[in-house]
Image (cartoon, rainbow, N blue to C red; front, side):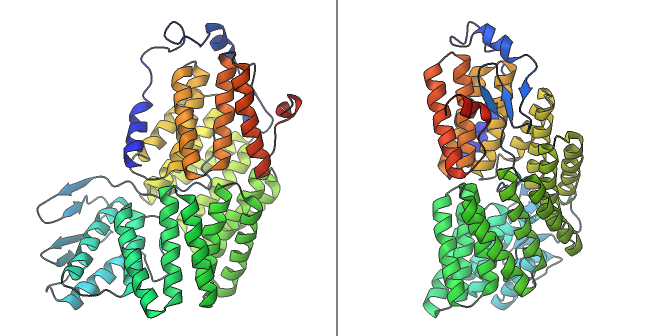
Length: 489
């Protein structure tokens, strides 16, 4: 996926010339001129009239999986990868001759010292036996690689690591984008837990593997792992892991358009988080719960849930969670036609993510600011925001978020008259949505491809694509624009 993301980044450079005209055999200049007039938007702002068809606005990233991390600004030496020193408050960890130096120091290569150093490093990242931060800073990403190398030195000495430390190492590797390393640690922990009969540990291992597969874009396998985690956690009478697995399942089901089942999962997880007194878990569950009425058009209910989540995140001091809930409140403002309010909120989110040195959150905020600009028909500004977002996505293995941003750039290209380039981007976005099972994104891409077909006067293809898209939206329980009903879809 990394190679795909890099290809995407290079493929969306602005064309040197307008592709409409002699170089584009099926894009009529009259169609371009018609399409470039001031667009007519639907009342909810989610549809643009092309003159012969409705073009769907790109999907937002309010619940997208942009939790991957861009790893940059590293200098390789003979002994280690040393992160740049932008964040002096973060402990610098240098791996050298089986020792860690800096704020976490090991003077000997003694195995107990190395294990202690690994645990101290994981603590410094905010990784506990159950909790993992929502993101790591760029510096921490580089440090994770060194901690993983250090733990590997123990394996080379045939020293077994406690499986719960392996789980934490897997979480750290996943957050830093080292997916293969994360897989190795989760698998090793799983092997220990299975042999010892530790169902709780086994459940947590499956939950970690589920998150990892979701990041990779394999929703079906991720769902299978999360369901296994939930089943084992119930056997082990572990409400915390049950709640985590339910939240993970809810998100996966929501991404696949199974909103009723996702809603049930989120409600059960919220009840369990309240039972164990986990306020951050409660805030996250409320935020996820708000997404269901949002996509179904009940903005008032969605806003109440998002506001409750936002306030709870603020009370717990969780700035990352606060930004995610605020982004969803901004989407509500957009649906109400309050573009200036939505822009203010997304700008505040962007500032939070920048202050946290969180490139994944920054990419999400930039994408959402692009959506606001698009709703105001400011295509140049929207394109600028989407390109910034896509640049940060280059090293993040996140298919659906990349697809959403690519589809956004495709819509803008079509609106500007670069129909061939726009169609190519939308088709690529559609392919990524299909690969990761994101049904709502798949339907949006099909509707936009139908609008492109209408520009070529290909009525048969337009109708086929729209029929497929509307069938998907009906199956998901999503609203159908009246125009499609009037046209007999």
